[in-house]
Length: 539
Image 1 (cartoon, rainbow, N blue to C red):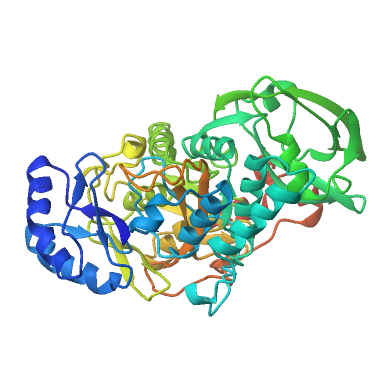
Image 2 (image 1 turned 180 degrees about the vertical axis):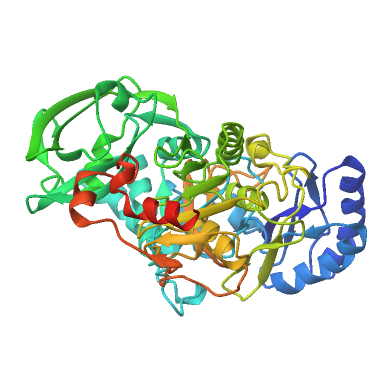
């Protein structure tokens, strides 16, 4: 048998739970199930088992035919599917940890159809990076690895290896390697600690020194450029500035260059850490006639990170500049607060700056789009690997999850800013959700896009909590999370910009010498050619 766990749209009250349990057993039995249904009001989920050879797509259609007249439907694609074998031999069999790992891997590899709305309150969709990169033509029958092969390797190591290693570490590395081998460049396995940090960051709660960085170079060698120092962070307190470049980090008591540490990604990993620990590194800072070198020792702490920065233009006091750093869960509330505050200060025109914005959460960008559109307007459409398409429209939204309450949309908020005069600033690092924001303003002819062609990323990632696949089932005690690319998405016009990017209405670059001295966050207004073009456009 295979157990399926679904989120049910429209299912939220006790009487509907009873109705589900009354409606589904008969249709399930038609597919060889025992008809047993397990439902949960709090997570709006339903679980049941069907034979392994049952067609999930046909089953979903049959179930929805019964549910739709009652205002409910299974979300498509369904929630996490995992497969549990039944039968005497399987139940009585004692298996090794390696087999458990293999079972988990097989389950993940067999379930590339994923839900956009997970039953877990900490599940969310993240958008960031470039290129889809999923290997074509692969299916379950192509898999070379299975529980028997991995179990054999595990048993040989246990029986003969002089040093069998750390089992937990081995388990983590097996999963990381398997996920990496999918060819999905966004796929990633997170350990328990990494997953907890990821969840906190999505809510604007960060732990570390408080910087946002991009890859750079200095005198021909690799460097880490600070594009943002978060207000109130340890980095700001220590005196770090946007534009500083980290060229070396102290690891095991020795200062090593970015290249010696293995490049940008591995070097950045050394900057991360838990509260109370120190990050020690060397930066170079632009000066009037060159660079100065400074060593820093910064103690990591937990802090709240703002995703919106608002200010009145120094060039034109009627213009409010709103920089959207990323689309975290608190971003809609922060965005609304900043725009309202600037309106109260007399701003009549706006610049929305999404340069270097890597994207973020689906519900966050949907909420912000709703502020500019009318009820019923198309927000975006998505398509999964099977060609199933779903369209998202502007509507009043009230999330059941407390975590997502910050992304609720009220009737009064819909279209709140549709009459604003504004421009949108973009560059080559404007990606994913930030591109959707840009495309929406373009497609509905709401604002002028100014700057450089965007990154070109039109695919979504779903993040799964591996410790649970629903309110009742555990995956062998495995902890952590899994991120995989699940869908392609399209703006209102219907044309994908994946691997293409969005070309602005007004194409203009920042002069190279200015870009080397400043980031977009601390660049003087008079030197910011893209901002100046926006100010000129709105005169």
